Image (cartoon, rainbow, N blue to C red; front, side):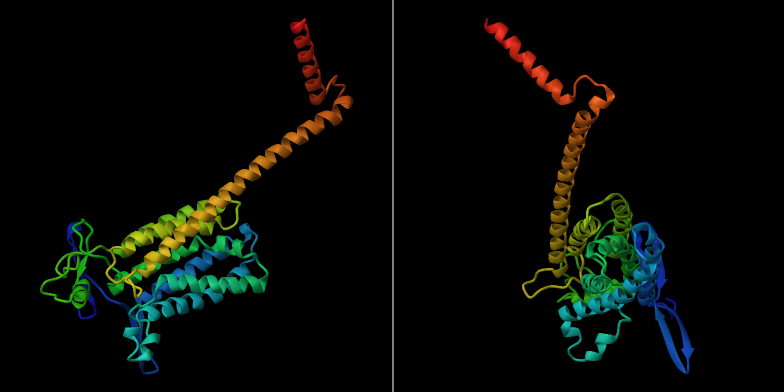
Length: 340
């Protein structure tokens, strides 16, 4: 393995072997100090940048100012990073309790996605209040860019060789010195590994699963955002779709964060997201159906009113209502003749 490479990655079932990857993109010297640019941070930065550029480009078509969109990103980006780090540190405090300075070292990962979502939504809420923009409007508009940025960021997990799953015999199973070292570390007895945690076997590349799922969700949300007129529909669709994906992916990950009761935190949050998404979508569907019925009734009433008002002008002998009265009178006469 090259001295500059951190990991030697293999996908045996795909015939991909000895793939050398490094956590560092490049290094340079600045005022006598060596600066390293890591893939993890670079990809996150690119994800935010691409999302912001796309959001700016399409803002006008959604009755938003590009300057307002920039302002939202200027507050949500730091809020997302802070929220993601605080969330991770809170549930992995044992890693940082001996040296709190590690909290500020992000080179090796340690950003929890759901913490980033919470931080972003809080920042958007405050900015929406400040700019007097309807919260549901900006959340629906920005929602599609969340899975897009997330998809790009997941490749940072690949370069760090983290966030992978249990053992698998599927063709795309992945194994590296990074996966083996981690599984050796979490096994109580590495010589007799726990089921699904064998360091010598390939694992699920869960980063790849989420990358593909998030790209698909991004495309779906663009369609939903364009077609839907009900508030919160796009955001609710994201919560539903990603909640389902993350619930199942989290079930096979080896680095899940747990509560004191042994519950996978991200699975619990995913379930809550799915419930929220379903409730909002059902409410919107009911409202939309009621709205259609109301519009149909108004249209019918308008047609009847038009018949009454314009019939004399147009020289029509009878209006719809008069015709109905006449038909009813004829029916009564027929009934009387029958009785006679």
